Each structure stands twice: as structure tokens, then as C-alpha cells.
Image 1 (tube, rainbow, N blue to C red):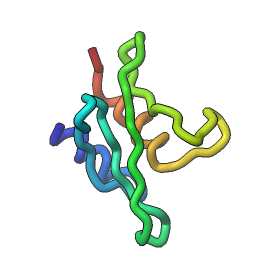
Image 2 (cartoon, helix red, strand yellow):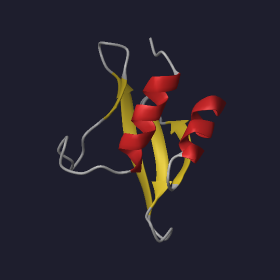
Image 3 (cartoon, rainbow, N blue to C red):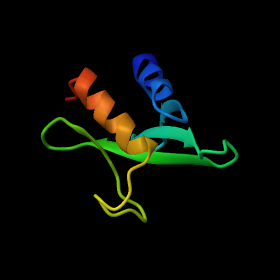
Length: 80
């Protein structure tokens, strides 16, 4: 978990990751101004890749810090 938080901090506006009460990895980050806090739930798909859960988000529509975090984490770690 500590290593994933270090990856989170390398992403623009990324702060840290935690596991929520449902067992999902949650990436926490802020807006460009730093005033608004966001969190995105992530899950491991059937191929062992971390992916963000979509909520008011359509894949390919927007790219944000959570997308960058997921890409970096998948390059560094193997999830099972």
C-alpha cells in the first residue's frame, strides 16, 4: 500500500491511496486549484490489471489524474 501511495504522489495532484470499507482501492487527488478533493474507486479486472470504476465517467471521454495513476500502477505492479 505504501508503494502505491508513492506512485499516487508522482501523478499530477495525486495524494494517496487507501482501501475503502468495501475492499476497493481508492485513489485520492485534488483539482488543479487544490481546493476540491476527488476520489476514484479502482478494481482489479479479470486480466490482473488495475482499472478505475466508472461513475459519471465514460471511458475515453475524459482523462484525469486517476487515469494516469492507473496506467503508472499497471506499469510498475502485477496485481492478482
